[in-house]
Length: 369
Length: 263
Ligand SMILES: Nc1ncnc2c1ncn2[C@@H]1O[C@H](COP(=O)(O)OP(=O)(O)OP(=O)(O)O)[C@@H](O)[C@H]1O
Ligand SMILES: [Mg+2]
Image 1 (cartoon, rainbow over the protein chains, first blue to last red):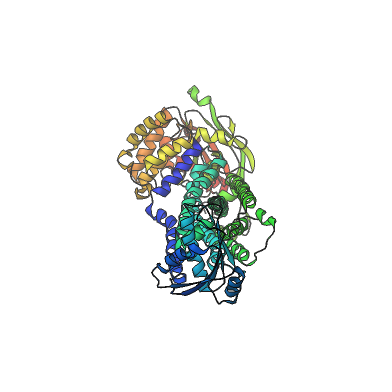
Image 2: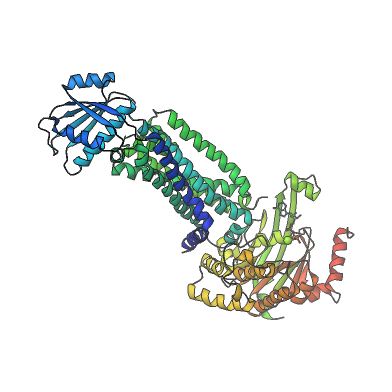
């Protein structure tokens, strides 16, 4: 009951202050706008004259041609019917935009398949995106398979970009959300002497710690969710041909991403709450918090640069979330590693909460001058 | 004497508290020693139904003593018992049976008196219906009713003090510990507070207060302890202690006896 009252107080404090609500929701809106601007810069529909080789049962190639030409950019598609090998050679040399290989007796139904071979040029990627969108549109009702094959090892610029930069951005925005609420609530209350008033009552110190960390995490999670939505809603714009990439990340990926972010939030909140409890003023606490922030930023930048890391990263807070968010966004569904990271972060959070309640009972920390 | 006064409610035994001074504090205190003995082997008892006053000059150690009694800080040596509970071994029990009012404990300015009363009621585990009737009674008694929905930060100093006072006794504690309860209040508000202390006494509460105001002690206290330099210089019933003289006169006598001269 006492814990409940403590938690309710934090929520009340937050939801009755419009300024706090704005600080929490702003990051998501900023991400959304930012990514949409980037997206429209990256993906302005260019006019291309595609040359596309077609092999196999080619009846549906005309459908794709018609759909691509109808997209309003004024692009044209020239179909060249040839053998598979000849088409591959042409794409590889850059003479053709792509090669479509239809399976024998292709009908848009289960059992049939289409392969799309494409290169690294913008023209090639653009056709790949458009064609996949068209085919998946058809395939939604009729389950045939669409496979993309790239001749370029670095396949998709946008996907790489997302996988690399997004975790970093999410971490940054989550951190700032946690920071704005936690500093004010923990260091602020200590500085103003209102925490001492609660300490003078018989409430358990662990309840005071939980009464801070739980609601502040929920509030920060709203901020994180806002950033997350900002990202998800910008993906289509950023990727140009939306369905491919959105479909590329399955439901499972989104669940894992969300869990990773969610496990990361209470960890950061309790870390900031810890330094806030140690500090004498909000100013001092924000000083320490910016050190923590720089560490977190460094860690996420390192993980962007160093791509191959062993499973030991699971045990490293923050780094684990960044690395596996990156992997998932890069198309690798690292299920057990992600779940283990979530668990690890939870353990660290519990440890920090325990530490905070110890500090709340410490006269030196709470009343030392 | 009334036999109410035989029931020992507060017992301080040889309390000692030493603070480590920071550089800055050393400069302020004009000392080169890194340690400051704030309370130095203090013992006294307070009994049920009485108002006990700790009287002493600035820096005597009154606040430090009350902070130890209310478990905010721990004594280095000695122990104190409130209703039989040790402040060292059983701080949670002590917190439940005392109401502590001191300028160090602030109320969050964002909330209203109404909200804070309920919140601290919950912190002490007061039942909802009991809480509601107590709120009505206390808010009425102190004229807080009209301000119950005004944010604490928007209240005047006097009203803030009244709200703090009401909230410190939200759980109807048996022992009330007030550090300088009338500090910064105008005569009207101060009277409301002192009258209320008298009323609390009549309700059978035991009250421990600290002050450097002689008239407050003379008006309210049954017994008084004079603290000088962290030590109990003199302690006893007000009339015995004064021995016919005014409290002020007696205080200066005691002070001279210990310090030689007044500065
Ligand atoms: N946290 C602290 N650190 C260092 N010294 C302290 C601390 N708290 C109190 N002191 C010192 O201990 C001594 C006693 O302080 P205390 O506040 O108990 O006095 P007081 O009797 O309440 O005085 P006042 O009438 O001014 O309130 C003072 O010299 C004070 O400077
Ligand atoms: Mg004092």
